[in-house]
Image 1: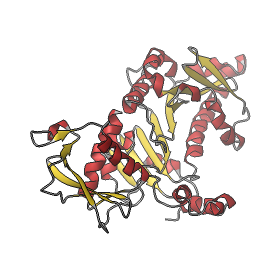
Image 2: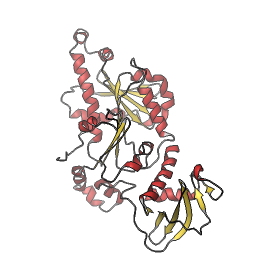
Image 3: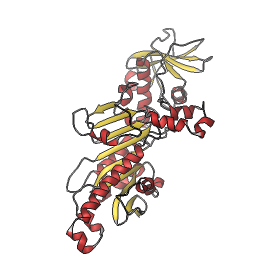
Length: 377
């Protein structure tokens, strides 16, 4: 099948989850400039356009004029929630619709206004007289709970950039995300309802809270297009047209060879590109033995190559045997936490791209240890 220039979101929306049902959550990871954000915003505008067209056709509208109460009376879930991490991002959330609106001939009113509620706790996004949706933040998930009736007409949630290049996720981010979703999905005559949730991101790292929670970081293979679970799917694709468009720019040529530009123009992820599985070369220093799931791994530094290497070949003579998990701790091991400089060394090596492995088993062990830290951060 011929590759499309931009993501075909309609096709992704038709995919079923592991149970053969319509998923509630769709995680979408592609390269930059593939059109995923625009496609998601257009989906929100499609639902707005359909509901406003229905309102225009009602006798109430013809007699009373264009009034917001029309939409309140409709049963269709036409509104969208934009999810951010921090409150300071909310006030300008509506501006992201500007470009998508400029290309929509079916929506004559293109004036976006924002209304602050509860001293900026959340914002209402208005398109003319209509409520297009709301902007909320994960960091205020607790305070947002009492306002669940406000979101009774929401049928779509969009969170852009769910993977962060900085890796600075919120503490207990998954719990905050779930709390916000439960708040949004209550009300409207139902104790709880499903809505379409889109999580969008560029390709950055498998070690993010969402992929770790759903165990995607261990299930995804290099050429996997879909990973499916109960109530969710994850879609992965690299759009060659987007890669070529970036490569053709003067900016790309000016920064050719820079690691970040390579990430933006190749199928590799920013952090965990490639497998990082290869045999070691040169001299090394044995640092310690690591125990995970009752298996021992050797941790070595290959200083000539500047690599930290983890293998299934521990040094039996080494007396420094460490573990990061209580279940592996016994009288022969030392239990250390994420604040230990040894843990930080492994995490930094991963983040900076000089952590290597002898096998998938070794890599999965470290990914699991790092994943536990990210989820519990």
